[in-house]
Length: 118
Image 1: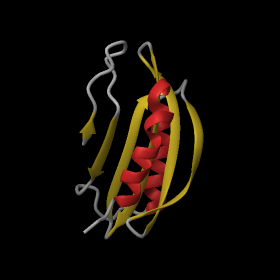
Image 2: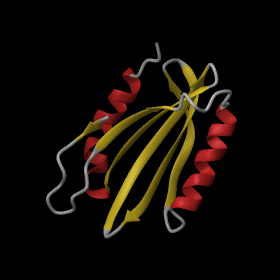
Image 3: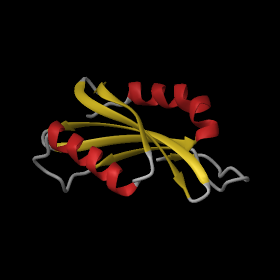
Image 4: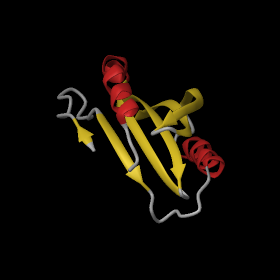
């Protein structure tokens, strides 16, 4: 995980997180996408889904979700991208305050484009 120093005004970090859910064997892209959509609706009922669609991660088909919500008194925004290889989910999430989200998005997109499952 890459984590920036906390913004002194909000104590919120800008970060890029890579997760490998090895305990979730036999996952499919459809089941993982359904999970993400349902989980965000439950975890952030007052949040807003900004965009969702298809993406390619490490040469594999995947999906992504851009979401915004208030975390305490701070407005945050994030994009989660995911794929499945050999039944194992791989998830990459970039998050930041809405103020900094667009500023660092190109850097996060470069990191996403370079992601490789070995």
